[in-house]
Image 1: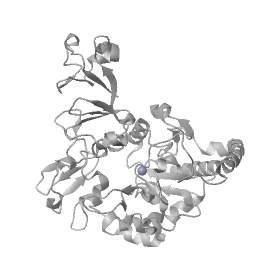
Image 2: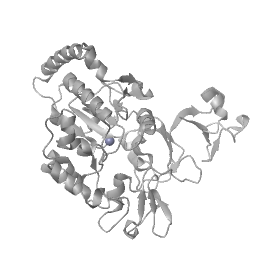
Image 3: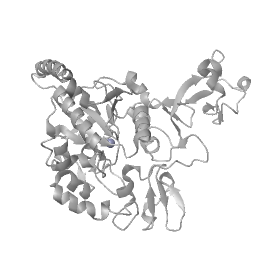
Image 4: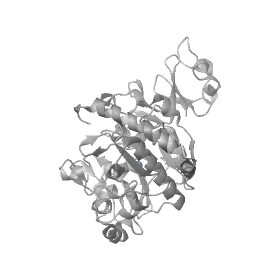
Length: 415
Ligand SMILES: [Zn+2]
């Protein structure tokens, strides 16, 4: 993965040949195919995604939600190649030769950005709750077919929690493993046996090589210790009741992970007062007994945007959609940038005060030649259409008079 390997091209051809044979054999028996109820629910993002360099891993995720919200989220952001619903039905979301964005900041055996080398499967459910029997059957068959198609060995079927890693933060001075517990249960030997997987990684290669440190010893136990040992610790504090309450040992980071300072993470103090992650400045003063609620609606005084604070990363505000085509950044100097065409430097240079619009399509700039109607048709009058006026003010389609829109106004359409 890091540099050319001798004989790689020839090996690849051999693989293609084998893959073609496998396609024929996997498609042939009707009984086999019937086991997998699979249909297309492709994301609109397919046409923008590039081809994947190689396919060496399958990464398993849990959506941490129910059927409907999970499917909507996964499709909207192109978060996986497949999603396995509670009743065992499987949907194709991103075409399997293209890149799906599921692993985020990831590393395995020294290689980063696993999305370039892995297929992603989202399983509707939670990292620490059993999946349904129908999901077991479907996931086992889906994984089996993909493994044979791409020649992926059992130990390369990984979980998101195995490959995700975090940047240094207030609680961890080094890059660390434990950023997510996503898909954690799929590391357990008993679960893998039901999925037809006979082996698993026995240790974290990046921790062993000291590229990363362990930030979540509990997760480490679940991922790599024998099942009995994992069961014993699972009953202990970290997966027991009240796991969303801050204690002396259970920090905000431990509960919310890298979403600790996110506007969708709410902190309810023992006094009943509520603050959102991005509003908290002094993390040492959060009292024990504070409850941490994830996935809250951000309260932004009714505004449709979030504002970047000093030293805050775009991904903290926009989450996994930070580099999506439906995330638009408006810098204080009026420059408008779209997430998917921004470079790493563009992200690093976003000044504090930048407005972040998540879930909007950029329709264009009003000029003498292009009216609002030219740019977005009847949607120009909608409440969810925003006009970014040259002076920095924002108006909705309901509030603005079309003949009063100054040239240079940018239009965003709610997606
Ligand atoms: Zn995941």
